[in-house]
Structure formats: C-alpha cells, structure tokens
Amino acid sequence: MRILVTGGAGFIGSHLVDAFLGDGHEVVVLDSLWSHGGGRRENIPENVSFVHMDIRDDGIHRIFAEFKPEIVAHYAAQHSVAIGSRDPKLDAGVNVVGMLNVLEAAVKAETRKVIFASSSATYGDTPAMPVDEASPQAPVSPYGITKMVTEHYLRFFKADHGLDYTVLRFGNVYGPRQDPNGEAGVIAIFLGRFLAGEGVRIDWDGDQTRDYVYVGDVARANLAALTGGSGETYVIGTGVPTSVNQIYRALVDVTGFAAPVTHAPRRPGDAREVYFNPAKALRELGWRAETPLLEGMRKTHEYFRNRDRAIV
Ligand SMILES: NC(=O)c1ccc[n+]([C@@H]2O[C@H](COP(=O)([O-])OP(=O)(O)OC[C@H]3O[C@@H](n4cnc5c(N)ncnc54)[C@H](O)[C@@H]3O)[C@@H](O)[C@H]2O)c1
Image (cartoon, rainbow, N blue to C red; front, side):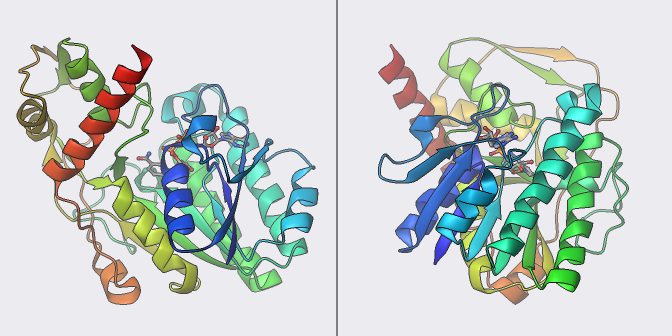
C-alpha cells in the first residue's frame, strides 16, 4: 500500500515507518520537525521520501495529489498537554485546523483510510477503571479536547465523504527514540537521568499507576488497522497498571544503578490509577501488547545508551 505518515519523524511515527517498510509498503513522511516536538530527521531511513512541511500548509494538497496515499497515518500533533494548556490557539491550530487540512487533502486524493493517534487524555478526570472504548470522554485539557474533536470529525468525514478511519487511543507509549524532554515519558525521563548517573524525582508516593505500552506493540496495532477496524475506535494498552515505583525498580534492574530518589508532593490533577481494557482490540484486530515491561525497558535502555555513546 502507499502510506503517508504525518509526524513520521517523531517518536511513534518513526516506528510506524519502520513497521510499514518491513511489511513491504511504500511510505512518505510529512513532518515539520517542530522545535518542541520529538521529530528528528535521523529517525527516518535515508531511502524514505521525506517532505519537510507543516500540516497547516496548503502545499500538502500537492503532496497528496502526487503521492496518492491509500492510507494516511495521522501522527503529527502539538503533543504536549502543558503547551496546549498555555496556548490553546496553537494547539487547535495544529490539532484541529491542521488535521482538517490533512482530511481535506485525503478526500481530494481519494485516500481510503486515516489511522489516527488519539489519547487517554480524551477521558479527562479518571473514569471507572479499567478504561475502555465506552468510558465517557470528558477531557480537561485543550490537548484532550482537540484529540476528542478529531475523533468526531473523522466520523463526519466518513459519513459525508466516505473517508474510512480507525482511531487508536493510546495509554503511555514508551520506547526507543522517545524525547526525554517529553512530559508523558516518565520512562524516557528517568532513563536519561539514570544514564547520566543522576537522581530522579518521584511525585506523590510513587504508587500511582499508568498503562505503559511499548512502541513496537503500538506499531503492530497500526499494521492491523491497515485492513481492520473500519470506522472503529480501540484503546491500545497492556491492561496492566504499572506504578512509578515499579518503573523505578525495573530501571535499577536494567541499568544496575540505584539512582537517588527525591520525593515531591502530588501534582495537581494527577490521577491515582489508570489502565485500559484492550479486549476489543484483541477481538477485532487480533492485537494484544506482547512486550513485557522489563523487555521494553531493556530495548529502550540499549537505544539510549548507544545514542549517548555516539554523541560522546
Ligand atoms: N507518546 C504518547 O504516549 C502518546 C499517547 C497518545 C497519543 N499520542 C499521539 O501520538 C502522536 C505522536 O506522538 P509522539 O509521542 O511520537 O510525539 P512526537 O513529538 O515525537 O511526534 C509528533 C511529530 O509531529 C510533528 N509535528 C508537530 N507539529 C507539526 C505540524 N504542525 N506539521 C507537521 N508535523 C508536525 C513533530 O515534528 C513530530 O515529529 C501525536 O499525535 C500524539 O498526540 C502520543
């Protein structure tokens, strides 16, 4: 298939590119390499066509017309809850107006389907656990709002223009290439500090949990969505709650370094427990998370260690 990946130079997008290429597809990456995002040119293989362009740019219509993608994996986004909260207009400009530019270009180019990276941020303050596709969405951040709005636009574009879609709502994705400065990436942040021989800060009592899903598993969910999940939404997570303390201990295991810990109070709005029930993805896409936390951590550690060596 011909697949255009917006945000394909970023953390998750670049793993999609690898998975699509590995499956024999033809891939074009469109990415602005936004200075506050995790996109890097070196995340994309040299032989993949790379278009350095903003999704808000009208020029994307020309790119779509030339490449005629059958599938668009829409991963470009203003991905920071903090930036979106400080600047909701910027957030909506990229995540809504930019997204509409992508959907309109896709309709014109007769794209069959859009795969969209949505988020647990669309749920807002902790609904009943575990979270599934039927859990009520009441986002409390502009980022969560624009992600939810996109899901509604996708329904509209399917109904009005026949543009098919699959929405994948991710838990906390982690793995190689994650930007250690990213706010969602406690594993990447901690790893960076472990490798630098520095201490880490654990907020609250460290027993608060999230659903951490390995990026390679997320890439496989996208492969499944190329053909499955027409007009459907899936939560994509492990189904297992993992605490910050468990992550800390796993990193001590993986690195052999017991980083000193300082404690800080609970951050306002921080949820106690978040985990998904991914049963629908298993039933309909044949997908389940397969990478145990320790194995995912080892792969992530290896990547960051080698990258640090290359930089030194
Ligand atoms: N990381 C997670 O845990 C997580 C969870 C849920 C959803 N998501 C979503 O997955 C997608 C990828 O996230 P990520 O963690 O890989 O972040 P990332 O920052 O590494 O990737 C996003 C990419 O989008 C590009 N981009 C940003 N603004 C753009 C614009 N205006 N035009 C073109 N390109 C632009 C960036 O340069 C970057 O390469 C995002 O849509 C994000 O909201 C991520």
